[in-house]
Length: 256
Length: 314
Image: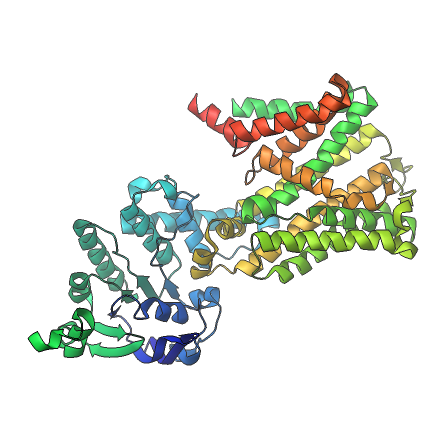
């Protein structure tokens, strides 16, 4: 398994954001994590990517425990995430954003930067070509020289994806990539996620839009109040009475 | 336009001792050069990583004392003194960077202020080492000793001017080389969005430490030059005023640009002297304040970015 979470628990004081959650993400799939607001989805992402320490439990990537590693080290293993709230480098252009995202694909350190300018120039050319390829892949080719802060909301979300892709993920964790987007933009994002998967990148998705989730996922995990209440293919999860109850309230089963 | 202005500035800087015949004016230009090194160093932290060091005079002062103590007490070569003025503050910068770990913003400011306070107290109270408030007189001038030739002293203002000019050029090139590489992008990523930077594999602590080391070493270099130029080191080198002056130079010149700190350093070294010559002391400080506020009000991002915008618009 690409990713194995075992017994993940995160407590904030008396509240358990995650209460003993275990799941796996299989390589090459699109796996979605859904659930009502406050169910613990983003907390799960934070724990997996090292932004938060679990109170208990372990995370393994390709068999190796990565629990408690610092985020940049986890990213270097190929686990790269995006954020629920749009997160770019606002003062930089689209191209500079993606070049920054390519950090792990460069090798130049201080001594080379100061003393081996030839190596720096060669690396810069290579990274710039790579940046342009990623920018074209997400469809921001016409915007590459614009500052990120000047982009439309939808384009900023595409830029976030481009920055994450630049980091060379093997497992890409997307936290609500389509939130706040128009219907047509959502279709475009769904298509983009499909193309990302075709590149051999495993996708782990947190998303509220059910149409999007059910359309592209191989597997769906459902969290409610920090517990995993369902795990299966999209059709089975949609029929699951406990999932329906979680989304529609406890009275719903009487009418179902 | 920008290229012509640059060539004019370089030609002016290269020939200054030939036509600046007033020694005091040349002294002002030498101090502008030393401050340019300091402002470039502060800019690495403040302009690129976005962290404000309000204890930067500490690195300047450690550099000055390193150069002074090694040459006065141990009578080592001034060049070794100058090397120590780079290495020791660099080591201090490493300690500060490691201590900072996850401290950012106001907490980083407090850490650097406290550090500068400690070092300053040591310089005043460790009488046996530093002579306390009396300071260290008799720091030797730099001299070039080539085999087979009589030693060439860099004691004159004109000669030292070129030493400082070379130091500014070197500091500028170090900043340029770092910024135009993957390392520079990592520094900027800390300023722009450290969380996102971590998520794409950039180790924030590593790059903050790195910026602190290079910045502190460069400030110490400025301190070493200052010691060999004024030939005297006292606890005054730790004055908070020095730090404030560096901050003004970086912010008014244009933080996060390579030319901004140099423009700021020249302007805010020459300006007080020009005002002193033009008016009485009461008006001098008042006009300085008004001009500073004016620059920040009309060019909040700094002189260099504002000038660039003007040129690219026309």
